[in-house]
Image 1 (spheres, one colour):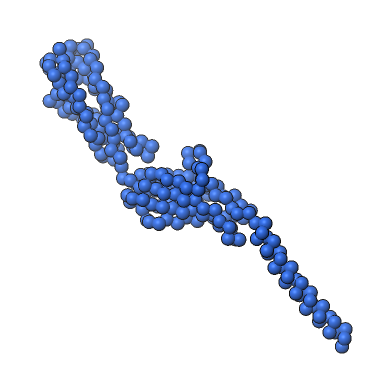
Image 2 (cartoon, rainbow, N blue to C red):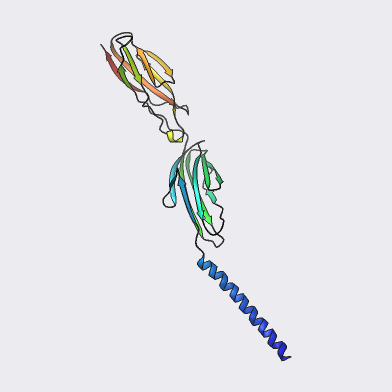
Length: 220
């Protein structure tokens, strides 16, 4: 009977040692585990820190590259505080599209199986459109008539050009004659001398007009 008891004791002791070893092994991996890192790149430029504040035009996607570094394969998690935008996550690329005007906060995270986490916060100001700005110059041509002038509105611009905004139409008011054209430069022959008012406004591809600007010209 004594040898049997001895074997049982050894088995119990061995089991205790085995479980103790497993516990120490798990603690060891927790201690040596490195937290994942999450970095974002916009237009080829890495973003500093872990926050970004930007603008987002309704209907115009904005894409960011993201990179997660870790021993594990981690899927990017995305949360937003309000449903003012939509987003799509692909391999190393996340795209945002504005839907409703206002502030929208996104929280991006990369979390490993040990609970270590890297975060990135993005705040978007979602807008519908920004009206364009009109600008023009006038110079005398005087070829077909002494009263022939050129109005050049090519310096006009759309303030949200980086979101795809552009000028689509130019409205000219030359003295009493008003017309619209897709051309940024026009020539006009005034019918007589004297003071003439020239007015210009421009429209962007969202259908919004700029404020009209004017200039007085004295023809001799």
